Image 1 (spheres, rainbow, N blue to C red):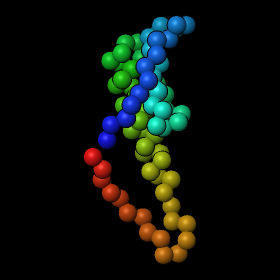
Image 2: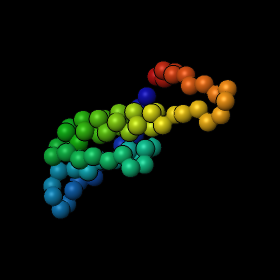
Image 3: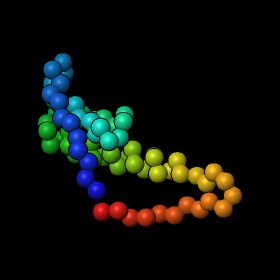
Length: 70
């Protein structure tokens, strides 16, 4: 699965800020473009892991299954 990210120069501190609009609140930074991209990959993985852990059955008869995508 691929995600679009937005990379912005950080005028105050130098380096770059990067975010993933598909996952609100998923942001990172880095001193270089390469570092920022590597960091947002880790942030995206962390966000998805947390969101996935929130899955809970709400009523009797519901089941949790795992599926792979991409």
